[in-house]
Length: 203
Image 1 (cartoon, rainbow, N blue to C red):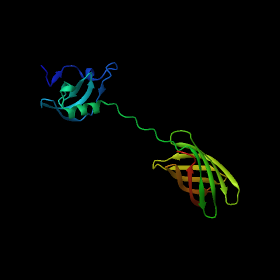
Image 2 (tube, rainbow, N blue to C red):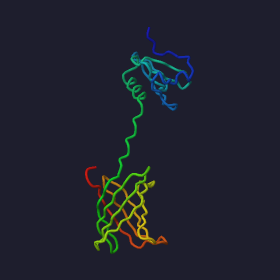
Image 3 (cartoon, rainbow, N blue to C red):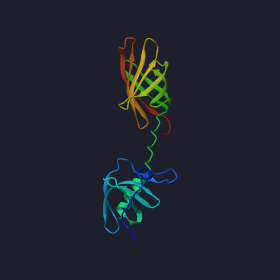
Image 4 (spheres, rainbow, N blue to C red):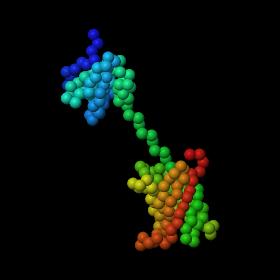
């Protein structure tokens, strides 16, 4: 005779899935909910695991309960399968590395900009810049861009000491845009402006 509930006497350690069992185990904070059998009987319990065609539950009082998956109502079967499924891995964050071209503009200085960005660690990108000023001269800088807590990237680049070239901006659909400034040895901004550059080729 089929029974809806079989109270198991195994210890909690026995409930936990052994490696060879390959059963999916619910977390320690699994939600207590109502489970219904095909005959309409109900039990309030939290999901523990689904293994070998059986659903293992635990009541709020700590009693362990087992029921065949086929004896659960269809909605509860679906819930058990969903809870037993392994968590989906988070998609890898898309890299913004690549070659970019664009422009910069500020107080009395503007021109074309070429840049190559390479991943060099978590939330860090190395950058090689080539700025072609309106006077047709090309200036090259190198440094790093670091991702900040607000999602934007900050970078400080050695230019012609005692000055630094600073960038703050963000990526959006293959385009990097933000502010740019030239800072002297005392940290005072001498020139400020903006830049925008787009990754070359297909994303």
